[in-house]
Image (cartoon, rainbow, N blue to C red):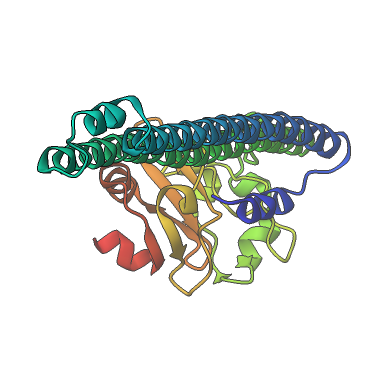
Length: 309
């Protein structure tokens, strides 16, 4: 889930008044905490790169000093007035093969010293560059983990106040079943609902028979509560997870977006989603189990296709 999807959930939840203020205050506190952590993560990367840069400059200077020292030592050895060269001249070896061999030896010694120093510097530089790359990768991993934790915290904050809002709404509406609408006279005693049926943007027709055992406070265009709070008498409880979070992008039988729909669970572990275009609950237990087992989500798939997989 991304921030846009979360904002849509918050908007659709209809939080108002003190609940909205408390939710927003909690979200602001969460964002402030994770923003501070992001600053710390970036600061750690900045310090690591600064340390690597300092080390690189130090090693560059060491290599420069060693290369210069090797060159100076070579020049001293080749100087006709140096100790070794003067002795060779006094012995009459100045223009002999012995002296020429000595010069070759000096050159070879210089080349080896320079080459060894350069190879050592290149290896150190490679380690420094690898360290800088690793530091950036660690920053990216920590940032990604931080954002996942942020989203989880924001979702939990939202679920807390959404559920509180639903509880208040149910309790203020009266009716039996602890906030559900229902009663002994069937359909909550609402004869008008029985005669009019259901009229929504996605469905117009007879009421779902399970509504006789109780409904949620969802209203149709006539102001009637029509969505059952049960399946075959088995009461539903919220999982606090949506279709989009578990299954991906799913549409109803007539193309309505179901991604933000709540996944409901019965006491025996069966899972359902309400498809308003069919005015009934669909059993999605196997689809949820498959998604959780294989970690795959669908993209823009019709619910009827999904249930056939």
